Image (cartoon, rainbow, N blue to C red; front, side, top):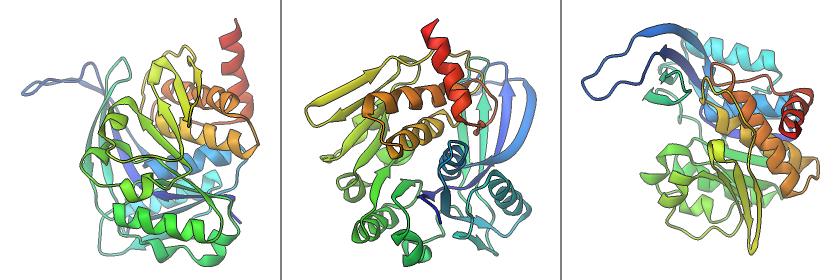
Length: 287
């Protein structure tokens, strides 16, 4: 059974590596094209499995080749896909991601079947045997209902609302989650009180945890970024894995920043996270 259930987006990513991100009416030269599975929930689930945490995925893909490939990649990575729904008459969500030489990204999305799953698509037995529910990429109503269901059986909940927090009302989920992951831009858009622990991602400037009146910070690790796609998902996987291993928040930030640095140094939305790889990054920080 899965120790963590990740609920949210499962995508097929088409990544274009360009010499520069163009301005409006501009043009950039594509040097390399890459296609592979992505999606915030799928990325976190894969990262957790790499860090020895059994993880399952609640989400939806279309009944097309992209959906089949995404499902196969996840299963090969060791993610439990029993609750990954296939919607035969809709396409799998596709993200077209332009990445420049500094690792900065520009994203264009085709949502497809991404949010076709519902809060009831994970059975009670799966929830009751898990320890934690991580939400990232669903409608606000689905997020709120999943928080209800998780709390009913004693699970802790984390929410990473992502880029669309500005345009969608996630307050019912954010206000009741034990952990909320936000970057600086997203934090400025949240218009509700968050009673749980706020984990603030600051990219190359590191990260911080705000737990009531207590604040923990870590400056991060130097990284030669080539693609920041999925770095926040790797960060979340590292933080959750460390907390589930009873680490304090200071240690969890160190692990999370190491995972984010690892992700930024490889192309694509996913990196092969592992504890030995985390230790390599930590040793670099001590040089």
